[in-house]
Image (cartoon, helix red, strand yellow):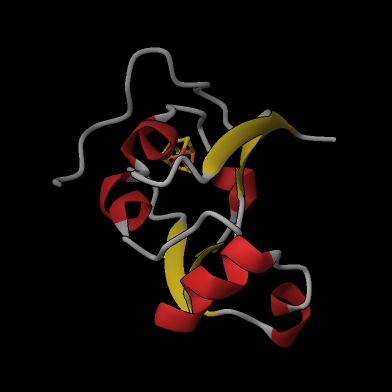
Amino acid sequence: MSKSAPKSNCDDEGGKLIPIVNFNSCGAKEDCVAVCPFDLFEMRPITIEDRATLNLKGKIKTFFDKRKAYLTDPSRCHACGACVQACPERAIKLAKVP
Ligand code: SF4
């Protein structure tokens, strides 16, 4: 999947919404890395702390691929929604910055 320019419904300033990745669902398919116009995702091995939060489904997924989609700088998210739409595991949602 190729990258595209931010969509017109983007939050132009950024920083109002951030992507949240559910590691129980993330299967490291990398679609989010491919589509984010701001390069906010990278695949990294799951940390010990994050591994401790996984449920059974997450542990099984992680057995086959130890990588998860981590955010490089969520404050730069422009809320275009491309990652949410692209994720085949439906592992990403956008949430208001607390
Ligand atoms: S919504 Fe997803 S694809 Fe769009 S800028 Fe934010 S992290 Fe990147």
